[in-house]
Length: 432
Ligand SMILES: Cc1cc2nc3c(=O)[nH]c(=O)nc-3n(C[C@H](O)[C@H](O)[C@H](O)COP(=O)(O)OP(=O)(O)OC[C@H]3O[C@@H](n4cnc5c(N)ncnc54)[C@H](O)[C@@H]3O)c2cc1C
Image (cartoon, rainbow, N blue to C red):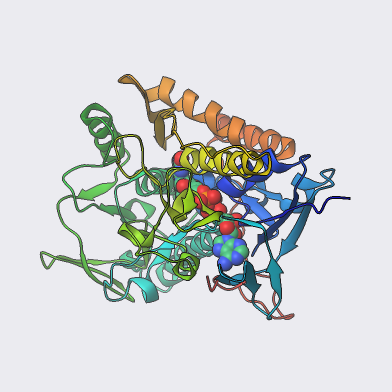
């Protein structure tokens, strides 16, 4: 019997999942390694952080996704090294997995740009534990403020959140948080003047949603302003302290919660691959998405510096990862058939961001834009279609319908944190 080549896929996010989808049922053996046992749908992470959805609603177990695919094996483990000359990846604990082909789809993590205090005091939003931690913290701060108010010492800072970064995650986070506060928390605290709660969004450019049309940007600013979100433009953080932030111009904002959505860097794992790294630590790839000098190694998604036909760096978004994953997998199958590799061509299907209830902006290729209710409905439909798992789609749809009719944000359980047997909370931050 001919030996079947082994493809190791690091990461089961958008890119890794798409790659395995192509390789399932073919003549190669696939081993998918992920540090988590689930595939996470990050575009809805802010809804977990703002109590609109529960963590399980936006995650699907990787084993369940690949059950029934005989040539796909799933391993839960943290990859800590790649050894291209030996064609092996190393897991923490020392185990090594040999590969004939490797697809690196390990995504990205938050970058703090060296700003003092971000790493220590700000909440990031890149993983499910991040979202649960942030939700816990915001709700706990309201509880603390209520207790202080009972004692006659209301603390306005406890009710203040600074969101840093006016990209889609920052806008979605600020919009949803202001709705949570004004429509849910406002009616539930007897001693607290929740009207004093502030959501302040800080953006270094002069508007929101960089990369969108001016019309969409203006719509986002107007909608957030209407929701009571304060905005500071053309300024950035000088530092984050335990009790707030200091802006470059000297303004100090006292806040118990700082959410950092401003920076992304490629997963440090790509440091194991040869070649000088590009902006944000992304690894350069050839036009077929393989690593120059290593045609058996492909890097896709957020970790790769993928370019379009004009040589422009593609954004770190889900569609780039999905299309890249499918392309890399197809090139492996072509190589197996002795056919030459093809260049990757990205198809832009457009981009969208939601700003809150019945408010979203959607931009399609060819300059077609939607805003308001229509944009919001388009956003709901697209996110439901791409969410993995029938159960998740059904639960999310039900949650959204319930929330729309009642304004209720039901996932407001404050979970204890920790990893020991004495607690049941989410695990500590990922090392990688
Ligand atoms: C809050 C948020 C909102 C977003 N909203 C949008 C949006 O609205 N639209 C859009 O298009 N894009 C959005 N994005 C970006 C989009 O999610 C990413 O571009 C996309 O996930 C990249 O896919 P990927 O496969 O490269 O990485 P990911 O999908 O992040 O997958 C990486 C996988 O690798 C695993 N992994 C990482 N390191 C290791 C390791 N060392 N060992 C083993 N496994 C590892 C991770 O557990 C994860 O499963 C958003 C991202 C975030 C964080």
